[in-house]
Length: 173
Image: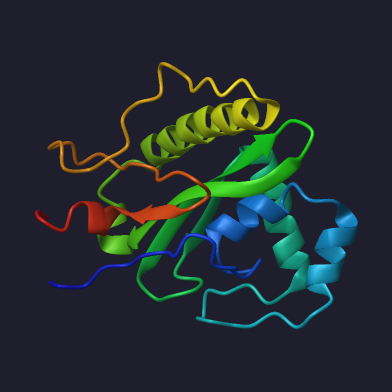
């Protein structure tokens, strides 16, 4: 169909309409969340939460569940998941996620997507922690990250960015 969804690594995303932002903000101090929520929240779609109470409740759910979801909240027809990257001594500064057209993303069980993201998030956090502390030992069990090997399972991209499931599958599906 020629359509695809993507995220730009490093792009600042809204706290109320992006899984990547929710995964990070859920683990910030109350003062930081209060500061961000002191500004008016933009409604991007009919599914965007603009109630500060609803956003706080969702952030609490992300803390409980360990992952965030954004379904038609930023762009219609787009679904994304994100997991926080917790760094000892630094807190949660990054998230790792996947975004794609909802119709395509729903072909995969959400628990499989979240498990893959959590695995990558933990491995990348360890690798980054090692780099920061000077040991630079990447986890040996970290699975390879690239599409093109014939495997069409959801994959997580690294370095705080995201990879579109549909972009990874452009040659097929």
